[in-house]
Image 1: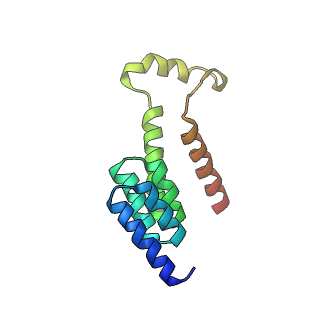
Image 2 (image 1 turned 30 degrees about the horizontal axis):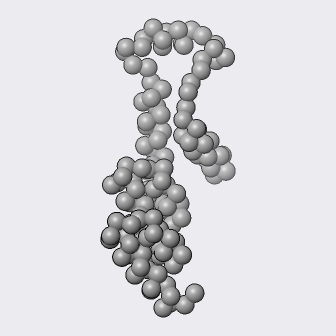
Amino acid sequence: MNNEEKVLLVRKGNECFNNGNITEAIKFFVKAGYRDGIMRVADYYYYDNRQPLVALKFYRMINRQDRIDEIYARMMFALGKWLKPSTEKDSDYERAKNSTDDEIEVKVHPKLKILAEEIIRNNEKER
């Protein structure tokens, strides 16, 4: 693809994005390999739509490790808060504390489980 074609794709992508047609803009930005446009899409999903898992996909495309790490940190924080016992559930906490691992069933959203497993695999690779 030559520079003229990339410029046309970026212009179409910007026009779609500015008109609120994000799905079309994504197609143009990805096809052109326009990192700034992909970053705008990722930020849109992360900050405006509050959809960090969707944004994560786009941050990975452009290798924005700082944002990827931020999303992972927020996920781990949320998971910790979710798993931390509240004062209202002290009896459940005491029962779980005194039981064996086989007796405890923790329900985790499948997407969160997949991402947590991926984080663990990546951390193991880095060691």
